[in-house]
Length: 259
Image (tube, rainbow, N blue to C red; front, side, top):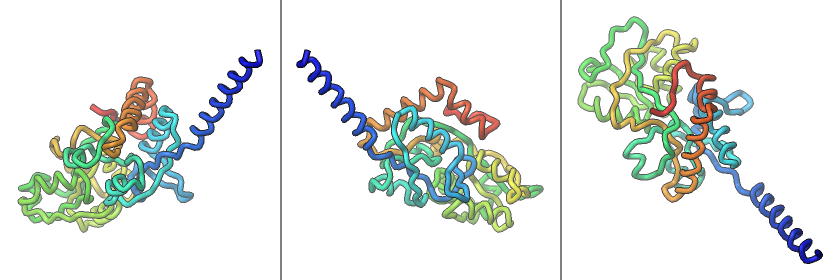
């Protein structure tokens, strides 16, 4: 009996130690650009983050039973931050593209949207390469949209301007300093519905192109195969359980579920 109690006591001690170690495990550092990208990521005056990706991330972390900590980084340095181990995961509307897959790994897609051209209301504008000859075409740098513009419009005669942040590009387009910009269709719709973007309208969707990839995924280091599998499994579970649909309906009128 005493021997059995010792074994039981030892098992309990191991269980307590395991729980202590789990609680002591460092939180995953989730990279998010300091620049808000509504409705995907938004920051309140108190510094709290919200938005579709933030809500989805919170649900994924809960499903994976891990602590996650948002770590703000510069958008144009977000992949180097991952490679340099300043962050563990990128969860910031990062499109899965062949070029990016050469240097980092991705989870399975967790959303997909088209790209949209946006310009001033009433302005007759053909967003084709021939139609934008002599026009100022704006795009945020270090994005799949920028890669698309470089591929399709390099010889078009358009004056292409690259911006560090989407906010800066939105402001210049609304002020008429840019004739047309290319950006994510849902982010475009959000901005056009705001007071600042009320004078803008869609000029059409960009054609589907392999450069846009299959959608947006969580960016991870190539060696973190186990973590990738955790994200893949959690994404599948949220979609199958209906949690994903509940989250997306909070922000969008149309589905952004990966195709």
